[in-house]
Length: 366
Ligand code: NAD
Image (cartoon, rainbow, N blue to C red):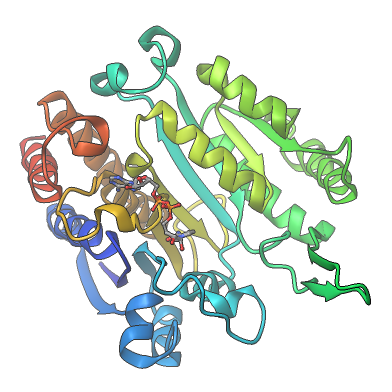
């Protein structure tokens, strides 16, 4: 058994949290006799500084030849202003990777941890038991549209636009993965849109409805308008299970969902190119914490590594079919939190290294 992993720390706190996650991967893989064939490379700002490009063709080749990629985070004020000819994927090494690997189905997991209930913005009784997956479509919509630009009218007025467009086939393939994820959990899914206003959202609702009715009649489907979904998620976080959202709405909803965990640093994600009914994902998938590069705390050794560590857990689940080992990592995180390990973002004082050590200690004890 072997898993070919490409680790791309990226920028800011990315390399710090990826280091911790790789240590956990080594221990977890060892416990199930899995050989990890690991290579590492630079991404985005780090690649720009050394090679003058956000991602090298060699890195893309390695990505295509991998089973799984572990990405830290990319970006920062040093590179945010750089503009390169071409679509949005040319402006960002991670967007390029997502585009190239066509990992259109992003699974973002947030849950309320018992040990952290007093550290979230919610009343403990309101958030206890909340466990939410936000499915974010990752390769379409306004974020990836080629219909974008700035026009200048004769009087000098500037008009900027990024067209939000979705085809029925893009919605279909994404909805199928979302329903499959919901089927594997509690058989409930909430699709969010603004079909009261936007044409792309009307098509979204129509297609999601069709896929649900024809292929997943056992999964309960409910539609919410996005603004209401965000409001309801704050008021009744335990009422949500799996949420299905287009690219931009999913981006917003998943950060909002992080509040139930107490910190953005707690959330893992899997960016998948497919999800078969059984067995592991075929083709390379990207695993990354949901947070960005957090330049404000870069280099201080205080970043919360849990989102990256849990990304390794879901890597084993989706890319290797090792759901049991994934659960053991999640239980180790829970054990470390229960034992009092808390990083600064959650009001504690444990460093990235100490938090990682705490998780590894718990993992070994399980
Ligand atoms: P961010 O997620 O980096 O940070 C938001 C806040 O959360 C900050 O206060 C940060 O310190 C904190 N935080 C985030 N992750 C944490 C962790 N693991 N531990 C402790 N605290 C944590 O968001 P931002 O500040 O809006 O963006 C920073 C940069 O990220 C931008 O310059 C942007 O270019 C880039 N970016 C990266 C990605 C990505 O990597 N996926 C996506 C979009 C933007």
